Image 1 (tube, rainbow over the protein chains, first blue to last red):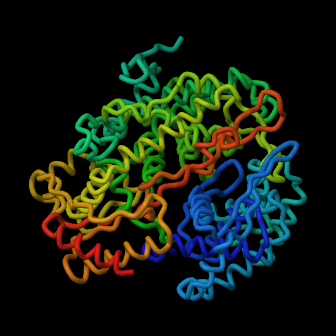
Image 2: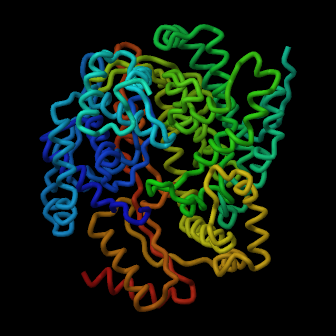
Length: 192
Length: 431
């Protein structure tokens, strides 16, 4: 698979298509959606995700975002609030030029189903909830490399370490939903 | 009372060690770093750049400790309130950070990063990285000296604790906690001990001044505070107090200059390609072993590779290294190419392959560890008069305006340089 990763313009197109279907989003949502596309739907984005302060993270996603803004496919705006800050990502004025390129149209056809899935399922999630989703899926997939399964209680315990102030019951609801939808592959409802 | 040892470092002066750390350093897995050059064949351009991962690793441990101590001194209350620390906890995690910093590079392949693109693939199709080899070597080769050392009776640290903080993965054998995720910022972020050391060290040995920044000021301004990003719950982060933002800016600019002037020098880059190809030729058929085969992997160091090259056993690329007869640059895009620029250079590479020679190499930002990336793990600034922190670019216009370098470069064998250059001109002008 090493040679089958998407090229930079193809990755940028995937990110742009996500934003187009979302209308607008923040960095967290874009990061976690890219993570889900790669991890759950096996879209070969080739990002190298590791655990960071806010769950699974790859600097390469934000690097591609920076390319996307340089190409004016996406537009990113910094905002501050009383107690924090964030970024608002919207379509750039050349987004259509990229998305209507015949090579990109072909590519998106191939992955449109996956993009639809991630946007439809998580469009209304807040950044905090998306972080919870990404973190839960990350813990589940860590079990894959260890060739083990994990009980939902243990999974929630680990996820709670990363997100200590997120309500446990809400974490559980998200995990249950992800199990129901077949997203979690190594998590069992009962203790293993 | 622990006995202390000192090693003299050209960058930091005396670096202090305890007996435990000295015993770890004396292990073959760590001594091997004396035979892994920090910057590959950068000495082909900057002859002084002959330093190794050994001295860099000691330097990273030294800086990581200074960072840790500075943060604890300025932000003990935050660490206690947000991460539940007491003094014993802080003392233990200081040791984990020291050891992780010391060992963070033990998994490097011959001549450092150049070999990363020939590392074997994992079952999911991605390549192993040197961090995977580092973690395996810590768990397999260094477990005993870490876990059974008498000094560890005071800390109860497992090899898995150290491997985990380096890998950024979950390990059920280790103590998984948000404390380690927090301290991981010292090892892997925009503001980590690794780059704080290599910028100064690489500058010093290469004989340039591009990587110099005010490390003392920067470390003295490090602190921990809570930050709220988007609507996520506030989380403790490591950042810089407002009076240190210029020092943080100078680190970012130093890194940019080092990439453009040293790491990304056109001749240095092509030697990374020749190194990777020479290693492929010198290795047995199956290539580098997977990380769990640590004993075999550790045999591969610079002495092994340079010996193979010297004996003519590293193929045509080994021969080119021996004679300093590298491929020559015939075309380069701008640092931030458009899609059209990328297509043109890719087409030119195809044309050269079809019409002139197979000895062509397109160096692209897709290759691992190749290009400068301003990074997204933003450096946060704690403001003096406002409660909420802001990212560095809020203050620094140069940092805010920086783009990642995405340049593509096309190289060919020197024997066909002129012919290839003419063809490239045809292709790039003909559109």
